[in-house]
Length: 229
Image (cartoon, rainbow, N blue to C red):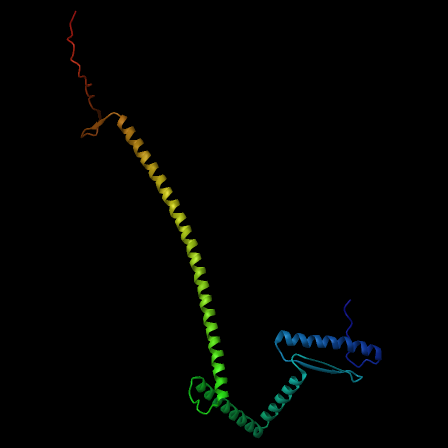
């Protein structure tokens, strides 16, 4: 059986109304916190109960959320009015020009230029800023060099292991080649030995197989005379 649909209207029973307000208020505050965390949004929630009690929730601070709301609301109102919009953008352009001029002057001072109008305190502050910047640059350089050294060491270790594997494969191939050579030499010697004990054969021009005459045995002893009876 499905859940009964609740009619959205004012609850007459004060006890039921208070229970419903408490439950839905906690759910609303929880959803606001989840929205600010999950979506990196600036959320501000203000709730007044029927008795005038205040409940609020803000991702940063309620004052900053309210000030931002007022500022955006005013800018939106000015943009909707053409005359106010022109004045607003003129103020924005003037502010940006002033910021750009300050940044350019500060950059020239960091490069060691236009220091004549600075006091001792300003020069000390500029020197401290340069030292901090130089320290940050050196730390970044050392970090990059350390990372590159570790990467080169890792690659060298991998190449050393690969070289060992190749040496092992080469030794194995040399052993296999030696075994094959020994087998081939053994078969060649066996064939030569078998060829030496076989009788000699000669072939005439007619391709007829003929046996050669056996060679007379060598006997260095003098032949005895044969006497006939």
